[in-house]
Length: 300
Image (tube, rainbow, N blue to C red; front, top):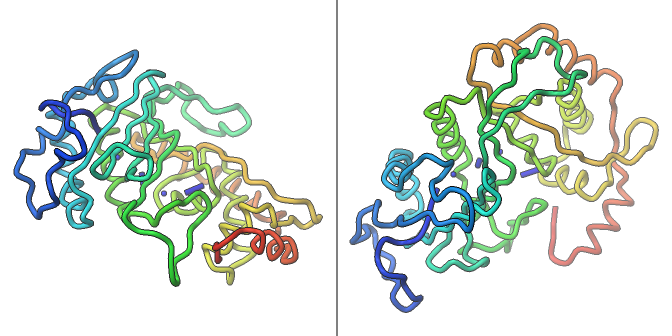
């Protein structure tokens, strides 16, 4: 769907081999700015978002307690990788110890860009193009933990999350403010992400907001994780019996007055409400049980 959410690269020291990595400790023997080195990309910029030096990036992470939280979870030392080969889109990853897929903590695809919504959803949307910090993909996970016992994954999860959604969102909001953006724009790949993001974000399209709210309203007693799998497995049906398929649309965290006014407007709220009124959903339990039985080890 998976809300938050968020920085960078090789060491200034000589390249370390796995056997050279320091042991975990409560307080590292090196400074935070030494964790980062060059943000080398194959093409494009070597700076995060094309502007931040390593010291500036480290200062943001330190200010938001990212290093402290990583150490609390025994995720230390850290490895960093920035891929700018598709700049202005950048892929930034944080790893535990070695830069291996199984050690990944954060996987972020991010860029800066303008956006003007389609006319059908514009309503009283600001006429000029808005400039956003755009989050195209975000994974937050603890590679030291697995799903066992009572724990089960959400769609798309390989490991349990970090429980840092709010803090990570604060990092992105901070970045958006200091780069003078109109807001954050995200694409919730999964339905459950849209629900989680809705604590902070608004759908640009009020009809999409109404759709998501109608699903939750129609099934108030279904646990969140179970509903996530029902939608993901295409086992949700509308009032006509048609299969519901999740399609991602833009969600925004507004920072400027015009955007805030758009989402606070009576017209936006009325359209959200109107779109809910004719939508009702039910679960195809036979579909759900059949598909869940075909998935090894997943419980929802």
